[in-house]
Image (cartoon, rainbow, N blue to C red; front, side, top):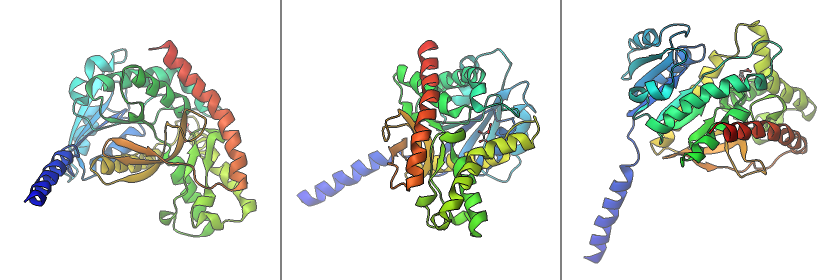
Length: 348
Ligand code: LMR
């Protein structure tokens, strides 16, 4: 009898716990900057995800097209997602305008801010993009504090620490702020596939550190295909991944940076985050608050689960080349993290 009672109790407990996990197909997602170059394809890829019930496309009235137009367009896809557009005038504050848009959101993807022009570094965008990100992040803190925020705002290396510290100061979980570095993984996989002649779909190179220049460190030694690449080819391949964003900026001749591949990468992470929230754990690289190195923010493999980031995973074994590069990563990344921390200090 006691055994049966314990069984009933355990069942009730499991049921209560499972209530915290959302069921498949029930998520509300917002794309802030959803009518822009990254935002439109990202919104489309998220609208196609069977886990998305409601998709909010938010942007400024000066965006490439009105967000209501993007929503009307995506609203014709034969998917269950209900797509809504939200617009705001330049100079208005998200916190005064996004209540309906953000309330109930599980995931907010933020491809916002100015893109680079040839000759610029990501760091050159810091001041203007930090203020844009701050407006959105403060609105999320108010209307959907439990949501995971995926930031595609450059320079990611400084913006993520700045925004996570702002969350911390509000008593919110800084791990809700996730820097999207998935495109570095996508590029490392693609370029490894090109060199080996293997399908990049079956390659998964973790990329650690950050998302700018030398801070991007692909760990080719940790993938079964990429580790077969000749050691003497690795420095050039590493540089190819580091410079890939700049190559796109140059190829677009002043008309923006990576949009389509960034949307693809952002959606890969977004879908993994939703799967995690549903209780299906996923591992992806991301740039988050971290204690796996001596730096307070770092990109590494992260486990996404019921609450978003559930574990920041250790770096694992590195080759001698990767160990040397890690030192270079840390020197550069520290300066960029410090700019973010200073911004949070001065702007909270
Ligand atoms: C990228 O990696 O493509 C983005 O960060 C955009 C850029 O400025 O390079």
